[in-house]
Length: 277
Image (cartoon, rainbow, N blue to C red; front, side, top):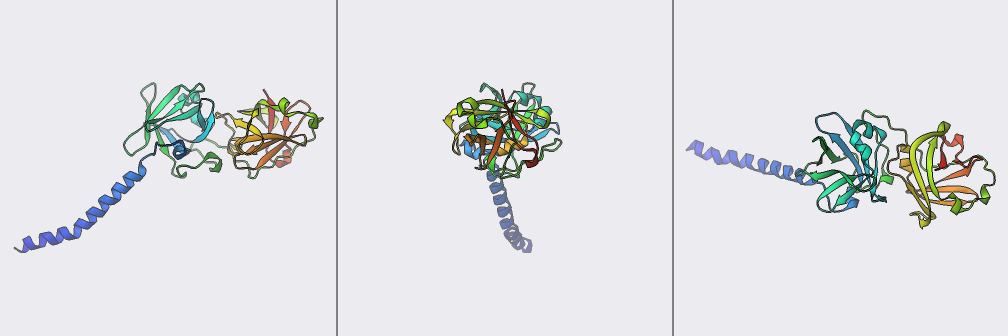
């Protein structure tokens, strides 16, 4: 009889603890679910890894359009670690279904499907599994222009350009005579010594930019972290100078050199110039 009396007492003490622990577990599981209802909720930093390997990289899903898909930014190291990513030029959200990485023509390369409350999973052409999970250091819904540069383990990431970024320039011959229509087009981004970064900026003379002026667009495959963070969205001619406007509102000024390139002054930081393609 004594044992019969003590049994409810032990259950009464442990029961609430079990209930609380179980409730916490349910809340944690629910919070881990990835929301596939809108592009804005997916925009931000993500970690991509390849199963059964130590290959991992940090990339950014952006909410602005880049051709047939949305813009996707990643360091060059991502493509070296996972060669399939060389085919990826953007991303798309199939509402309520999955996230797809697409090539430059919009054709699906990887289809990431939800796996319960865990990360998104995609099968590669050789049967390998890619895992896409929200980066711990990035809140869901952040836009790329508000995110800091992130060091990718195993790969070198250039230091971000200072903000606000002000680019002075050397004297340019007859720059004031240059008309906006003559400036519009595609430009290669060059660093010190004319080194091609592999980045391309398009200056559109017809569409309006997000921050005023005409529209500027950085190609999603850009490998120069400083330009990626600056993220030009507008441009204009101002007193003979080319003014690029960043997504966050600050701007950079360039002057034209004798060979037609637009260049900034070396004392303002690392050499940077734009060469028409």
